[in-house]
Length: 263
Image (cartoon, rainbow, N blue to C red):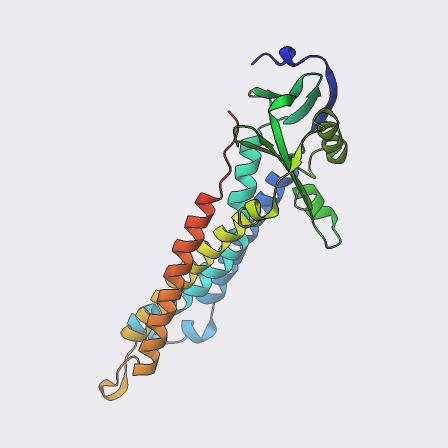
């Protein structure tokens, strides 16, 4: 695309992508460190090293019983990572927004795209009510402005865009007839990654439950006692139902909330 067709540049706003990548890498390292600490603590347990069943079936049962914790805790650290990396990859290196005389141009070192001002239909501005902090600001979580075009595609810039308030005011100046998107139309879409967190949490709970059931079934029992009572079976079935419903609902809502992006 030839950006010059939109006229001279009236303002340029760079997007800071490095903090998102840095924070995502820090979370990955932290999750790996948690796994390493858990493994070291498990295999250096003095009570295990001094017993004859250290490599026997009872010890394997014990390992399976603790795998739920090994999996759940690192996953909690990794929940924001897909979102951060996807946003950084979508923006690309040296991302920017340019306000030009006849339209808005955005792009990166890879490519540039643009839309004329008469195709801007609405703005949906979201600011956090709570007091912000430097981390939320660097990650672009305390402010978000979504530009909706006439073909219903969307473009979003956040607080990690340098001069984001000025960019919003310039868009409003060139598009005085822009409307504010109704809250009812966007409310559930605003929590897209919360739906993903619900789906991943439900999946983690389901996996941990399966490991717990496997541990109870394979554990030696006295006098052939059943692994679960009737009430425990009912609770497990209800728990699996809730986890399955949470995973399907969260994943479906996450996929449906994906905005159409201009090409």
